[in-house]
Length: 84
Image (cartoon, rainbow, N blue to C red; front, side):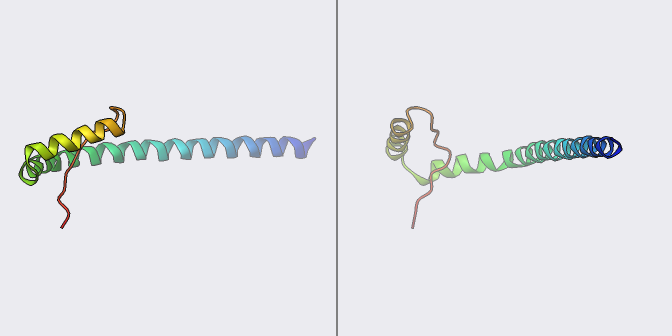
């Protein structure tokens, strides 16, 4: 019976340790996402002005309509780049 008690105690301590480490990893991931999102917002403004300079209005409307049809309204055009 002594070995069974030691085994159960070891299992419980191990499970608590894994759970704690997973919580730390999850919270660090959320913190990293928040930090990246705050710094990435500055780049959005530059992309919007670049999009206006790249394509004429008819092309943008056609691309947005195609994306809307293909994705059943769930897709969103974020950036348009001209391939060389």
